Length: 68
Image 1 (cartoon, rainbow, N blue to C red):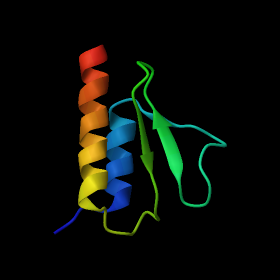
Image 2: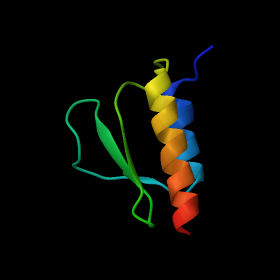
Image 3: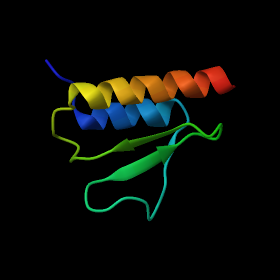
Image 4: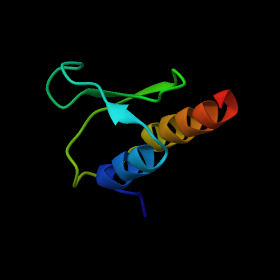
């Protein structure tokens, strides 16, 4: 069962990412870590995350951990 987008956003917050205000159009948003790692997400909180979104979030978190 796919995870919800709200869960991916919670994972990003937990690992120190913040949403950049004014970035992205519509449902699109950019998340940035203080180390410079970035990831983009789109969709509403209750939607199922697509496999590529889960992979991108996981990769961004791993990238941020490598940079610290």
